Amino acid sequence: MSATHLPQTVTLNITELDSWLEKKVIEVVNKVTHGGAIAPATTATPAKVTPIKEEIDWQAKTDAEVWGSKATLAAVEKIRRSYQAICLYNDTVATGEGDRLAVTNQALRDLSGCNGLVIRDWIEQHKDEIISHNAKFGMENKKDPSNPASYANKGKDTDKILLLINEEFLSGEGFKSGRN
Image (cartoon, rainbow, N blue to C red):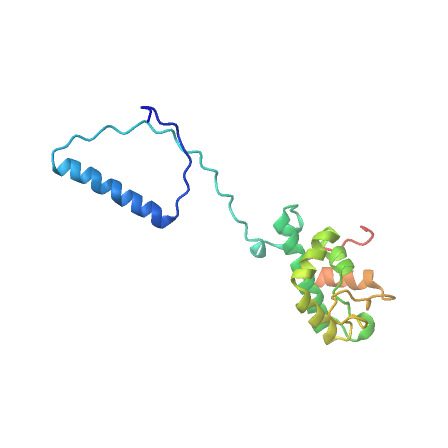
């Protein structure tokens, strides 16, 4: 073994670290109490610690803050809020079949302004809630009820409905007419 030690990266779990530290403390205490000399500590190079990125609570942000951001988690929050807005609209404002809006990739894309692939993944993760909500108003996929894709918005004035949802439930930050 050579006299110079090269710095090594070692990964320990908390139990292993506690055990190692305890062993080292006992060794030092024994040397001091029994009159032994303590070898000087080797010069340690400061560890490079990657700063932990602060987790942003997007649910606590205003609509303007969320829609003003391009962050990935802000996109997820835009989609979540757009979904909730459609559900609230259908449950409280809509009066009948002609003005209800099915939760679809296109409707969420129009309201949130997010990429359709990101929305597809979000829909897959929330498939049961979407199917349940659409089915509650008879807007489920008639050919395959286990598929969240719905065609119930065909022939509806979706721009008018989306503008109303945006103004009522998203502080006007979501859907922009003619943006598409």
